[in-house]
Length: 81
Image 1 (tube, rainbow, N blue to C red):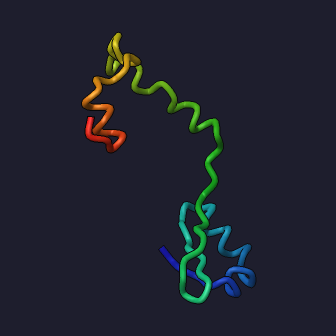
Image 2 (tube, helix red, strand yellow; image 1 turned 135 degrees about the vertical axis):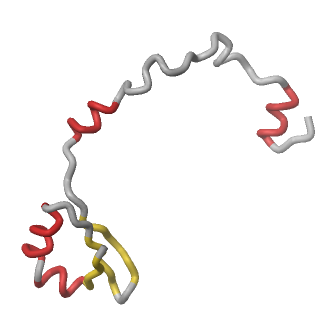
């Protein structure tokens, strides 16, 4: 993964975007400190196709939303219980 400073990025943006379009990722730095990453764009339709991919792999227990026992709740809240 290549890093470029802001000035080089502004000067060569078209060239950098062509490389990103081919799948490369490029880090943009300000005074040597990474501040942004140019990555290929993925449309949200790709994300939607991944929703529900684990359907049927596990079962949510019937008591999922029941209150926690007092000693476990106290541990989460940081009190002595």
